[in-house]
Length: 408
Image (cartoon, rainbow, N blue to C red; front, side, top):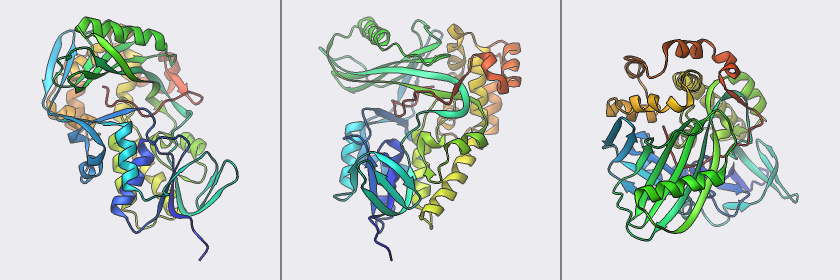
């Protein structure tokens, strides 16, 4: 046999790539895995969160070493609705992610470098170093998503140390009882300790431009209104994520496909309406680890089929995205989420887990609509001409993957 540097090479040590490496290390210990990451830290600088009900069988055990904080419930706030939901909520910090992954992988399994060429069985790094491997999966994120269109989630979040205890006992996953600026706006708060809280300002917007100084100022205003004196900003993250309302999947896949298996945002593996990717990344990682054929060609075929099924299963969520951006006046978009969060808790849990039933779909769409009926119908009929409804093409977008999740 030819010399192999590893059985599997995972390109990218972010959420999707890291979970794949972790699943392979735990479930397929007979295989040698190498993770190639261009940065110095795995996971970058992010917080990922999830509902306990989002996880597939085996998922909780895999994530356990990565979890930095757990809560038994969470709050949402809207102008006409305040509610506490009893779904457990967990968060993963990038520092915990990096430490957990390094502990699970053997020495030498993490390689720092820039990938300049990738084939199903060979990787070339900047500087000329080449690795011969049994299979490759590319999870490096995406600079753009050609042939997909919709709107945007823009966010800035800060990890803050408060001068005195902030008083939050559970996360506020969505506080939309704030001025509705630049589309649907809400604030997200995670109480990591009595004097440490993560606060993020998020928008569902028609444009991708991010005004970071303005968002920082609004975070400061929010803290003042809550009575929190900020003693120190411990960290910050910003980003822009796509909210997909329409697309030509076959054309997207042709443009993205380079003959190597894809994962994560690069493969379109995220929830179209919320940009929520953790449950999907986890399911994909577990399914991949169970494959009998982990060769380059085996990975490629399996990943193509998995991503195609994911796209087909996302039609309802893309429809909701089209209605949100095409039918609702920006300042009134909060009404859509306000109504949603008044529904049955189990329905909300299935929605985030990507397991919305037909009965759920009828319930979400029934009753008094939170947007004008005529505009909603126009949005549904006109998804193929989404640009007329304020949509944007993601082909050359500057996308940022990995962020506190979920959001809506």
